Image (cartoon, rainbow, N blue to C red):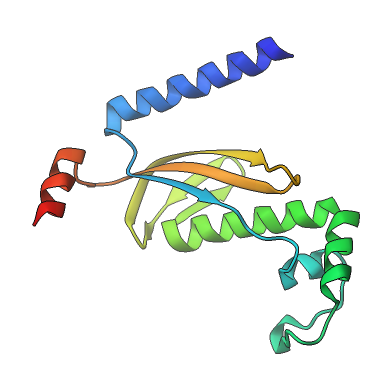
Amino acid sequence: MRLVVESWAATKQSQIWLTCIMLNPPTLWITINPCDLHDPIAQVFAGEQINLDDFNAILGPSKEKRAENIAANPFAAAKLFHFMIQTILQTLFGVTVSGHRVLSDHGIFGCVTAYFGVVELQARATLHLHVILWLANAPLMEEMATLFER
């Protein structure tokens, strides 16, 4: 098992280095860490009857019940994570993943030419994503330094 993991990591590291050679260093390094305990969408995924069209934060399950719902239904937490990451990538970065196709459109930072992400578990077993992105026509590090000096 360890050999397979090390081989996978070496392959991914090589892909990142090759992308850096082709496109310059990554433009952005981001960690996305959605909170699943208190998100009303996670509660809906866990089976709670919450009207998201007429949402009232005072109504609904207590914080203890929300935590219990997520602890009892890890699939709901994973579903929320997938939904949030997909929404963030699509809305902010213009990246749409559909099956094995990845489409890139303009996002708030411009057009993404490449990205690479790794999902990890935190100590409390919640998911978070580390992602590096390469943006089209992004200035090089030296150009950025001179632009910030102005």
